[in-house]
Image 1: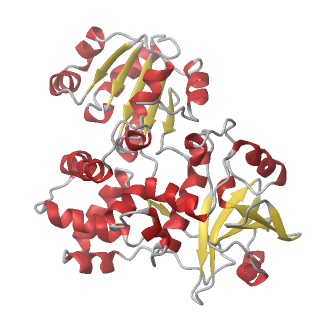
Image 2 (image 1 turned 180 degrees about the vertical axis):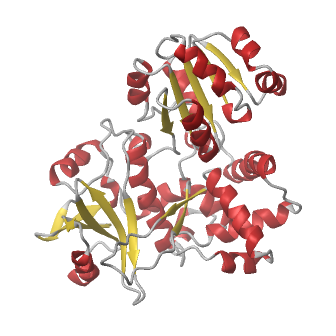
Length: 406
């Protein structure tokens, strides 16, 4: 198995010199403990997947920390939130920088617990699946923005890709277990992922009486990537109540199987809708669930536009998370069905973006960008992200950015 260098390594090393506690959250099997083990081998390590260790941590956290002395890596810390109060005491008593490395799934719960118990004492990072930059050898971590200088830097760090290459990347997804070569049977890997990790997380939180129906639910959600969230429609597809669908969807979001992109609106854009759009954390898993058996079938399917959008939105999101930067990203749609695929808010400006499979963008693709001039925030450079080979421009206000630049 080959270790794939993670963009977040540099950030973790820097924060370890400043914070006594670092918490890395993220979906199952994205490499949270692997990145920490790669950065530093010499420290105590314990996983709360071990039921005996978990019970001790929950029932006697003080004794647990006496037995497992700092510096320590505690994996799957969400199983014993009782530890946070005792870690806080250790930090307040002078624990050295880097004393506690924590990892865990279910980011929402962990971040809430950490912010309550360790406010101002913990650096919280979110690790995602492997990014395009990590897989294809980009060296410098530059959060994506619509700035010519930064985009030209990205060009020097990226591996060019044609349409077939892009859909191969989408179909492959970003889970390290597959891309590192540790596992070679894709279908068995994803099937096991669903059974082992999702069921375990789900059954920790909510009651699911019918496992098959729950997988059907996840599949119905995967069929709707890039669409506005419609809980009633999903519930109808799998014959469950809206309340059940809402509860199950919340669980998928907490486990970071999905994420939501919220719409942009302000008081001057009163016709804007308020419904978020739905995306999967891993396009490979979405392709598996929607039964696209190879990249060629995916590329020629009716799903190709939605999954391409999912891929691009997710790659932009990863570029910020891996650099430890806050991301302000939205989409726009109004009651007249006018839409802007993405809006990045950066340095006091709104940057509208359209996502297209085409390699020859035309001005009509950006006709809705002018809607944002009604906003109270100034509009900056816009862009079309598409299959163009090289960085270019539609006009002085709109760049054309190749997908492989992201």
